[in-house]
Length: 132
Image 1 (cartoon, rainbow, N blue to C red):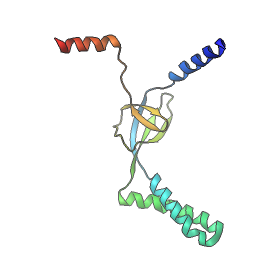
Image 2 (spheres, helix red, strand yellow):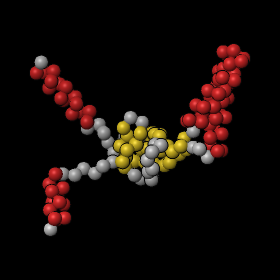
Image 3 (cartoon, rainbow, N blue to C red):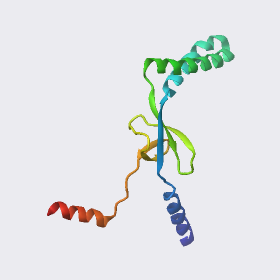
Image 4 (cartoon, rainbow, N blue to C red):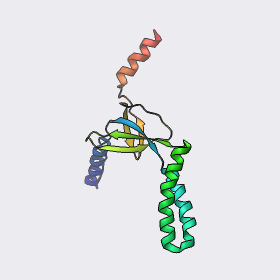
């Protein structure tokens, strides 16, 4: 039982270190919601033609839905992020705004601002300076 606990602790500590600082490369438009809405609408209309019509309608609806969202100006924000391994990855960020060059952490499929690491001693010295 002791060995299992040590193994779990070791694996937990190894996975904590996998969070790395990534960098925002650029901002791009995201039409995912327009494509989904257009695809569902196209599938419903195309279902009159049977299963093949539903598939064709969904494809055409997704194409026009993304274009319609772009023309209407309702595009969401997405960012191209360069990971530590050099891979380019596109992630959506509906609630936060970033600029090119910002350091971020990718949690799930969302970028979060990279927090600088502080030590307890540095925090205590800052408090002492403010009290003087």
